[in-house]
Amino acid sequence: MSRGTEKQTRQSKGGTIESGLKRVTLRQSQHKYVKQIEENDITFCYGPAGTSKTFTACYVALKLLQEKKIKEIILCKPIQEAGEKLGFLPGTKEEKIDPYMNSYISNITKIIGGQQAKYLFDSRTIRFEPLAYMRGDTFDDALMVLDEAQNATFKQLMLFVTRMGKSSKVVVTGDVSQHDISRQHVSLPNFIDIMKGVKGVGVHVFDNKDIVRAKILQEVVQRYDEWKSNNENKF
Image 1: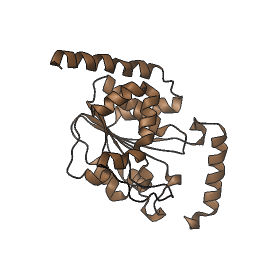
Image 2: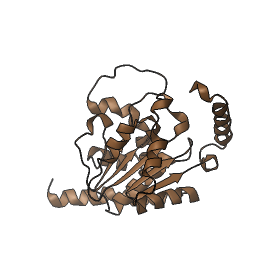
Image 3: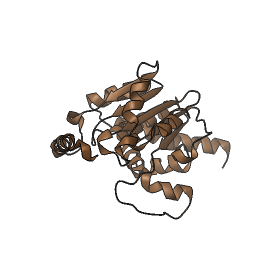
Image 4: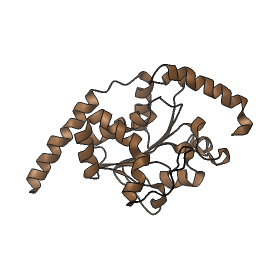
């Protein structure tokens, strides 16, 4: 393929990012989250399940990519199973981490469609990077997203944030009520507290009223939070 043809292909396929973004309707709380990411170098976001923390982060990443403010999207998540242990997974590094990254794939596909999502993943414009292999890396001209950060230790959070290179942004999201590691190792709240007040660091908080999935989840989450607060010593 010639350079001209390759460029034309990129432009024609890339055009669907814009059309996908235009189909998305964000709520007021999500717009505030988008603004935090756009105005800061590092953004922390936490809140209950169903508030579109991951979806909105993916939306902003694609928006910045479409606007040519970044060149790539780096997706990451602590490799931690939610209760059920699946054991050893065979295959390459990519095949091992794919099951943990389905939420990213699902959200990006919802926004821009399967064909465009596949193109961006195949071209490695969007790619997954496990925390375990990040040490020594620096990502320039990128939006880096760490999801499920409630399952990251303090050292892992610091490792991820310090991979940020020139003209890059970092987004760290989590739901501290749904951690899959022991409570004493949940570091996200303390890490955010330490970083507050640093110029270029933003924090966005979703609460139960921001849940955008089935409305019944608002009451389910509220009941769970009440139960958890009454059984705090068990976690």
